[in-house]
Image (cartoon, rainbow over the protein chains, first blue to last red):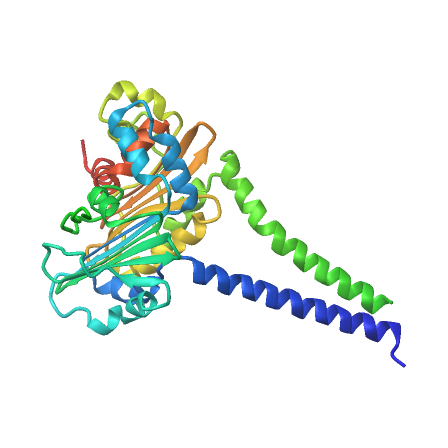
Length: 192
Length: 190
């Protein structure tokens, strides 16, 4: 016969285990649903870089952004509309003085994330820039969860990660603003 | 019975702490009147680079530079300086900000010092030359606090200003140029 104390301790452990798995499940689910790209794999290149640029507009700053642009000013209203529906903008650029300071393998950890389910490479996204500019879109059903651009040439790496409802048209309008570098993306052709 | 109470109590305490921590961080962000970390940032710089900031009166040289910086952020018009509100400045002049100490390590130290109550916005570094610009933002009711930390080989400045939404909009739209402007104006002799 089990004592009341034994049952209580076991029950508590079961609750603790259940709580742990619920939290773990929530974490996995959150990771699966987010279009946020981790760029910490580039940290070791910082010391070699001649210049680095990081911009983080997280969800709370995006909410601020929505507040500070006025609807009655045409320019600000345009920007306000552009950023509405966005949940974050994250930009990381590393520039190097010489070629060969980084290897293709240094970008692999980012490419691995972009091969995960939900991400799709936009094949018709073309850039006039030298080097490779790959654009990826994360979707869940008909919902767009985010976009990522991985651009690299011999002396520069740029990762642009925009969370929320974003498309190529919006991205090309955002180039040069909010720290998003000029990716020289060709404007998407309208669908017939 | 004691064991049961202890386990329940411990689990409760852990859960309470886990639930309370993010809430506290959020409150601090919203409030904007709690410890502003300005002194903490100055201390991080002093400890990391073994330097000392100078207590220069606000309206003296550093004040001039800060005023120009604030004017630039506010759109270039000194008339709009008034809206910049409270200014705090710490100036480190002609001291050794040795790049060999590691820009990445300093970046991590600054982020750790401010991440609880400020949002990192822009961070520009030139690891080889040692030039660094950090801009953090925080909501302060109707206005916004901006903390700008600029470091180059021989000088550094920590500036905290309060901006109106319209000034913040300019900063948000062109953060890189604004970061450089803060750096230039805070560290170049006028």
